[in-house]
Image (cartoon, rainbow, N blue to C red; front, side, top):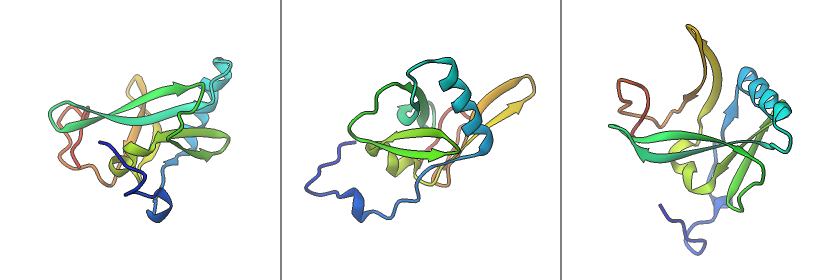
Length: 122
């Protein structure tokens, strides 16, 4: 998806933003402490899976020029402007499921999630 600055002004859009739960913020801070130079994590999306889109988390050492930054409890969550139509309003959590610990995304825009939980449609 391509956004053109002459037709889209981010200040005109009523952003719901992204939020981090205390558990997600704590885990991001822990990751940053173990990796010198890490500023936070970037949440983006890519076309994949049976439902259309999948979440992508990457560590951030230098923000991209189009990144929006959301901060909670000393942890930074970066998101590319192009991903916001798909992920705005998402709450990022860090949970334990059985023996696994993982980030979970509570996205109010997600529909048609696949059975394995790897992808979603909007």
